[in-house]
Image 1 (cartoon, rainbow, N blue to C red):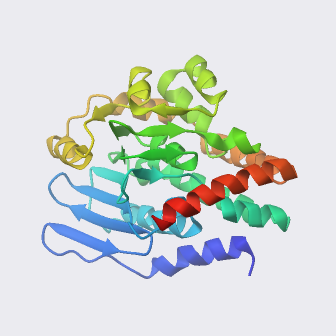
Image 2 (cartoon, rainbow, N blue to C red):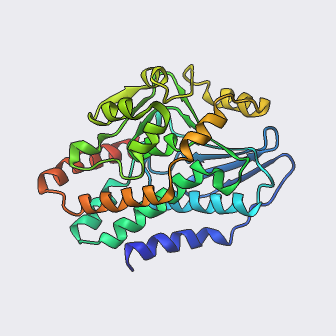
Length: 292
């Protein structure tokens, strides 16, 4: 089975599962996500499961895609918010599935790599467009490291909440790549081209405090208080920055994201052996984080 077929089949695994309501709260447990609905605030919560890998696997993308489809289909009624977060300690996401990338590169599977990238930007697009619902606000709650594709996922949401001490970054340049799922245009929408270009020129880890100063993080809250802060935020249903953020993000087109993925795949398929060795260092870091 090709990797592109595997991605499609993972989506299909979830299409038969319809959520059922039980009073004020609905909870669905899947392999990569812990999904809950709370009536107070009319919020769909999607948290990466503690037992899932701390990076963006095809499984996670498939489950996020299923959730987006269920929201569009009305399975959660008419929610006002969708919140993405992580159940892991000190880790939001360590980016893309680098071992998968290396495997696809080494066998020359351009279609498989493109299928991964397209599936990923489909969920970036869902965050930008409110899962296709005009009134849905998307929120990212970051509680630790948000690197690479994890940073992009947070940037695509209308509201970005980060706990103090969190770090963000794009390490892709260290192994010859660039953030292919919208990194630069997503940052540009939040803080302007000049600041975005300066940030993207280096592979630094940036603190949440610094990113709040330059306008990328919308709310900075004390460590360990993020969930309660977001609960209160959605309960009061008053977030001044939402309309501006939605307008900024929706100036980005799906075709721009797709072009970025195509360029990213082309770049990845021509990575030197030196850059592939550098990528393996990050694969090992992802593996160690998963085993903690």
